[in-house]
Length: 320
View 1: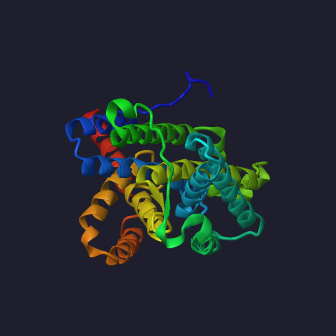
View 2: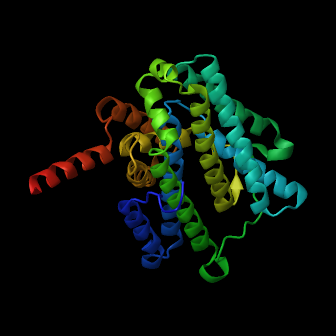
View 3: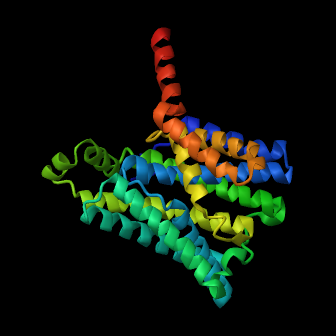
């Protein structure tokens, strides 16, 4: 795909332009952190949109895939004294390979969505126990302090703001990637597979290949986001990449709208706001998120983005 044919929706640019000026409006460290979490989670939700939405592979190990990359990059950097920017690609490749393997095994074994969810949830629990078990390497529950990552322009803007803009640009690129992916040959093939897998195979679409590619791309996005998350926090631990992260990502996806371009942005803003307002609930936050997810799935499957798009179409029709 050439740059000329690159599809860049104007609403996406407007959204990121607004978020680009937020630190100029409020440079409060707490606010900048919230802005960063919103755009970082948006990248996670775009990855979920590719894996769960486009290819219908119900991965419940997205936090584990992000955590694998964060731990791999940090451990390699600390162990061998390598610049973190050089170890991040290793973490991305590792996570992408794991995501591709999970997808391949699920497809070859003919697992349905529910069984894929069970397998990937089990993998997520295995990841957590491996991290806890390899205490000499990962520092277990205490968490591993990450090496210092140099963020572009941090000498000018400061580390916190520089990390925010780096992650903002990353998420902008992810949103553009998703916008073009759904219009590409891969996106068309995934739509055909979703519509009728048997018919897709009959006309020559390689179901295994396209689903594995989708899982690899989504896992790679999660991996880079996970690495950024770890270095932004200054620490990686099982708590940072726990099951609650998966629940939050799926909540954002469902609320914003599955298989929509703007859903991840809307969902991440809404759910991060909910998470911040319910922070005082402590351990009950996860229970609250679970209840909210059930309610959304039962009553609000379309998502906010789909409703807004339908309303816009009606208004434009009335205007004509």
